[in-house]
Length: 311
Image (cartoon, rainbow, N blue to C red; front, side, top):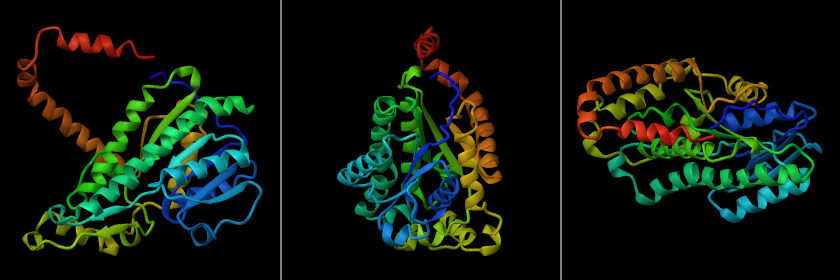
């Protein structure tokens, strides 16, 4: 995976999912405030979910259900018909299934993965084709950026959010892999945005609750402790402002520098991930002898040689 500088076009076309609330809404507003940029804002019900955006020749409001391949196909086609290209595709749509994993209904759990993971996968595949092929063919610069919004929960897991974390961890692995597949001359970049707590209303409206299981009812059960934290206004009052998160995303994409694969946003995200990396390093050191004893001489070197052949 080559580290290349990316230059955001002055008239960039942004395609953003999940714009009806939260980070998606804040980012859509941020892009709409840039007179030369073009915005494709999507929501399940644009007539109400996107009413905050003024009508403009540079703004296209579209209905999109990321779990529907036909809906994705239609939205991408409409965006290309209107603006001729895409430069930045932001996979932001998603929600959480919160509660006791043992009691989760299979359909509810699968729906989280369909939205948060498979929806991201399907749009990313569309974006890779468009950024690789269509942009250059339509007179724009070839390439662009795929921004996949995961969260701190894409690299660190907490009790009572198993299916949300499963989806976000999957997006992280998927994105890291495809970022290493693209050829450098295609100028296609990937970025994982990993916010910590954000004051978006996600805790109240972006989550579906699993019916409680009596075995986990005690208040000192880990998931109940986390519930108490999330429901305490004093504990969450210092969460990040979504407008600041949106400005940070724009700053990363438009920096004119190499776009990092992973970007933690918020002191909680950075701090938790930093501490987790330290503990992971200590754990690796403690297991070194066992790990080496389970392999063969030269095994590490052969893998390193294969990995060095990447672009």
